[in-house]
Length: 159
Image (cartoon, rainbow, N blue to C red; front, side, top):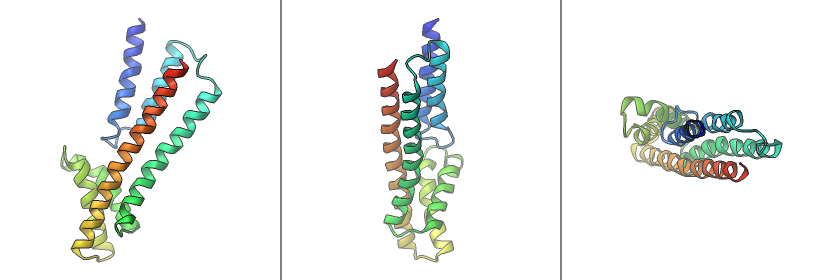
């Protein structure tokens, strides 16, 4: 029976990492869900208050990294709040409009369009800002991937 339990937990962790590339998947919920299922299936003994406090800090870091990477990517290339919002909307809508490449093209088009329409930037500046949104998104994926990996390593060390 342990194999089935571990399979379920590992599937949740894999889905969490898939959430790095599919923004609709709430990665944090799947990671926490894996921790909770471990406790239910096996034992909460190793998952004490310190474990949950540390994981809580990592969750805050995950949200902060996502937000900061997008803002820094757009602002570094001259974008505004409109560019950040456009990038975010493009990130969510892109995969639905263009299934595979939409994850990168969506934020680019969203940020560029927002800057063109809201702030009347010229095309070259809008394209640079769109590129910055993609750089921010990729930085976010890498950062969140590292944080999630650390969360899982810490979990496996304690169990």
